[in-house]
Image 1 (cartoon, rainbow over the protein chains, first blue to last red):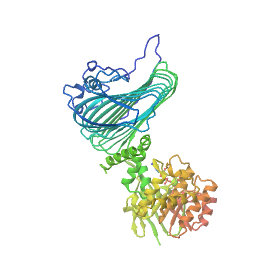
Image 2: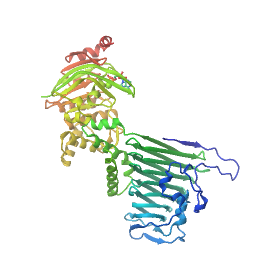
Image 3: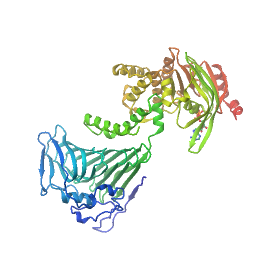
Image 4: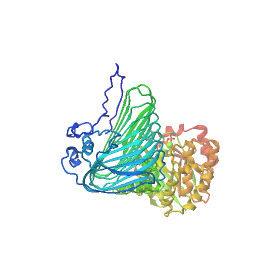
Length: 386
Length: 253
Ligand SMILES: Nc1ncnc2c1ncn2[C@@H]1O[C@H](COP(=O)(O)OP(=O)(O)OP(=O)(O)O)[C@@H](O)[C@H]1O
Ligand SMILES: [Mg+2]
């Protein structure tokens, strides 16, 4: 299913009146501000609530532990902090009850700081292996003005995990954030990535979701200065029974800001379900916004389900460019025919085509080793249904 | 010595799930190695259908007849097996496969057809040589298969594949259309090179005698209404060019 909501909005009239967006940029740190969802709410209607392992109506204890290794280049600081640290939760408000619950319940948090003007000479790596149980977490990445860094977060293991990642990309700074969801098949993750992009800053997010029973990840971006650029790329591959849900929101709240969203997925096997919600708001009174979003899905077998919903809401007449595209379908049998007509066996032809399909996303990753790692994982999932 | 025989071939185009239409209505043709057979005929008469049906295109279904390569019915083989057996089709409209680089694609196909992976160094040399022979810029090797290629560039790459894969029989479907004079010469030279060891049989589908000045046919066949309506020597091409197909269309209708 593909539904599209594209509604140019009329300017509001009268001073002080703010247009009401259907897209919710509001939120709260307080879990009690959100009623317990039952699953029919707009923001929950695609999520299989029963598989959330109780996250939406939490009453259990926090019993999960992780094995974390951090590798940071010189000059970058990584701190473990307590609940009262003022830097936590500052890039965006939790947008749903689960994320607010995680904010209310976490015990320890991590703050990564790339100081002003530091150009990190290698990637900051955070490898987290979850060792079962339930845990809530908060992570802050603060890239200060004129600094440059790449952060690679790898999530493996099993358990139920939820929390926020708050990203500050300071004035003129550049950050590439790679987030790998390579959970075991029974893990559950619900998380929100909030990014605040400052004047002339560059933020690139690459989300790779391959594992888990249920992964629901919401990257959200807003701007604190003109000239900010945000690029959100995603690759997901849902196998048998896996639910992969990505919900992006770009809030062009200031003039002369740019965004690109490009998510590509594949589905293979009974009950594989992917959801992509791409919300873009072009704010009242802004001008010179340049925004484009794209979602593609490849359904490799029967029994899969795709939901792909771009939402574009425009509150100004002064847009430089805004568009979206969404398409889902089968592997093109004419592509297959062409490769096979040159002697290439069917499985290899499929592999070549799917490699090609994901290539432009994978090529966004700088590290050749990581690119190869992701490609290998994709091919392994592919092989499951040959 | 190879013998390629099409016998009593009938085929339908599959239009939708429950709609089909017979296009090939009994095609008989024998091509021996080293021979070049030109096939000429009006638009819509089924020439491409013949080419695609032999190659195993999923939108066509053969309902009757056989296609023998040295006595083996290749219709029993999968698409890729037919290619590995030595049948090659240069398509009228080559397919764009985004993200798959031309060099990866060619290495995979050469490996599959030859049955072993060529040494990387040797393969690169061979590919560069073949590209040069067809006046293809080396930068094309890194581009996606036919991705954004012009019509003429696509045709050159079809012949590049012909030269790299060295099949026993090649069906060239309007390889000459869309080529400028220089390109026509370059592509014709490529076809002649592929045939130079005398083994390759060629079925050359065309609308124009222009290419036949470079690639000399041994036989010319008129294709009309899903079958071969008349066969002759090279002189038949001249007759067709001056008189058109009118006489055959009437007979066929
Ligand atoms: N999907 C389709 N639906 C309906 N008719 C089709 C379909 N595909 C092919 N045909 C018909 O099959 C007939 C034969 O087509 P074919 O492409 O084989 O002709 P051709 O001889 O190669 O023509 P040309 O010289 O123009 O290349 C045409 O009448 C064409 O319209
Ligand atoms: Mg044709």
